[in-house]
Amino acid sequence: MTKYRFSDGKVFEASSPEEFVRVMRDTSFYPGEDVADFMDLCSERGQKIGFDIRSDSAYNFLADLIRVGIVAIEPEPLWN
Image 1: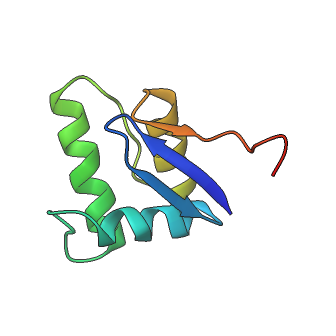
Image 2 (image 1 turned 90 degrees about the horizontal axis):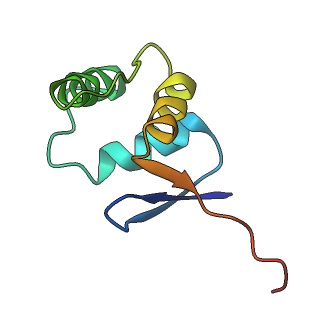
């Protein structure tokens, strides 16, 4: 599992980009009708504030959220 930290401090765990989007959608106030609709809605909101976030695949969606600084991958601890 990979941990992802949002710029507001929320942390999600997911094993794939698809799972990341599902978890993100499950906690959203605006989940849309399905996962594709949810990514489209997020992309539209991002464009309003100057972010180009692709919604053609979960991988591209997550990659763009990371690229624009909305999400960061939490590093694994060196020692448990």
